Image 1 (tube, helix red, strand yellow):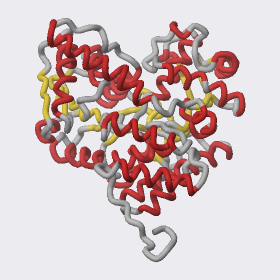
Image 2 (image 1 turned 180 degrees about the horizontal axis):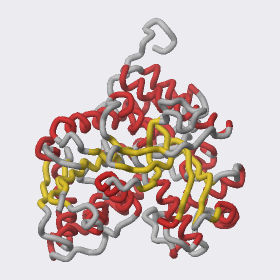
Image 3 (image 1 turned 180 degrees about the vertical axis):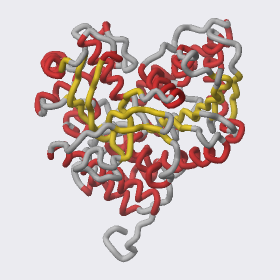
Image 4 (image 1 turned 120 degrees about the vertical axis):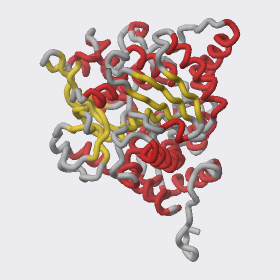
Length: 451
């Protein structure tokens, strides 16, 4: 029986134990001989690996586990790499959220200026990871990338390493489908959906079960309850914190204005930034919620396990873990399963640029994703996507060129920022906060207003 070697880049993530449990649940479909954990923060990773090993031992004693900070040890001869980097960890996420909010602008980790800041931190480490994998791993190895902000990371990879074997994915559409399925009283796998957009910036245009269109039913439900069941306890939410409940409720606000399609929940930040800021706690953001919740729970659980040998059931499999394993099984076994992933457009949506990194249904084969033709999209959605796409593409240009002006253009174009003046103020504060992480951004005009 063929077995695989898999590396987890960003092994110190709080999501790691849940992903490992999902891998263990699918060992018959993806038999593993080795799992290697790689992180630049070895101390943090080693704590997480304690939990990951305990999960593995519940299932098998035949998988070799390696905990390392050395790229060659991590990636040599592996078949798959799961990438889930968080550059700067939660301390920088907190600044990504709170600095924009201090300017009365959306503070969110992947959308708006916080997402642009996160992208400026992540592109170079992602390229470094690709180079390590291409140097040490098998030629056929795939990187399945969960690293945020996924749309900007995907554009950076397309621009800088266009021939790399990277499959960029996100669990937000899958989490949305989980809620849809719960509302309809079916399993998520029974849904047949159509979707188009950029990552964290897209729309469901069809939701079918057994060939029957159910989008009108979902539309009516959203008008009353948002994208939540009437009894929210009936859904096993990975996004269980109050901020996520609020996010799924806000889908009602979006559809009250634009009822044609079901939006990705993150569109709230672009369509209603004023409302989001007004209802945000500038002193206690999502980063604080995660640090006090999921992060604390994980490390408390590890400490208790090391003291008592008892591993509490804190690592249930959610859509985050199941989705990355689902697409990897389809890659490994050439199944051609249909999932929503990020691909280079190349005519999939003819009235968008060919080099746009879009999120659409695709068949996942051993040669990578094969996107389904979507066709032209209505002008309103195209115009919104064009603006967001420009912001993301210009940001990657800023990284490549080390250009302050390009960074300012990217911030100014982002729909969450009300003016160039505010964009510059937020950018300048984020530059100061990110000195350790961002490339140097040079101001080109020494005699002009820019300086």
